Image (cartoon, rainbow, N blue to C red; front, side):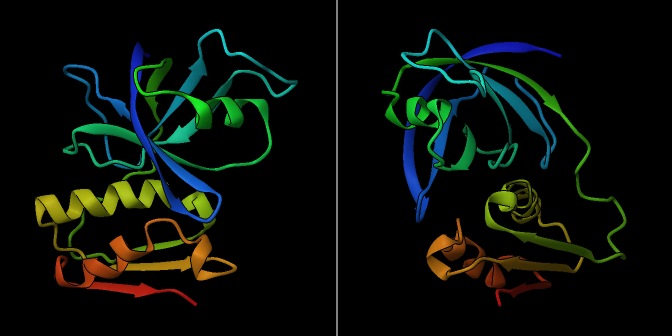
Length: 171
C-alpha cells in the first residue's frame, strides 16, 4: 500500500469527547467510501505502550477536499498528541485498506447498524451517495448513550431531504 506524509489542516469537535481531524489529501489520492488508513505520529512528544500508530476509518467521502478521521478522545498518549497537534503538523498515513463499501445493487436496501464512533465509514458512504445521487434505499440505525455522544448527528438528520429514500433511526 502507498505511504503518504500529510499535514493536519484543522480539527473540530463533532460530539462530546469526540474530534474530527482534517488532513490535506495527497494529489491523486483515491479511495472507496468506507475504507480505512493507518496513521502514525512522527517524533511525538510522548508515547505509551499502545504505540504511535492507529487505524482509522476515513470519515470523509472521496469527493471531499480533505481526508477526515474522527475519534473519541480516550486518555492515551497518541490521542493527547493528536488533539494538541497544530495545523501543518505532519503524520504518516498508509493505505487505503478494506472492503466495507456500498454494494452495487440499487434494488437492494443498504442497512447500516452502528453506534458511537463506528459511524465514520457510514458517513463516508452516505456523503458519497448524496454527491453521486445513488438510489438504493438507505437505513441508518445509529445508537449512542446520549445525543451529545452522537458524532455528525445534525449532518445525518439533514440527509432526509438529500437522499431519495433515507430512514434515520436514532433510539
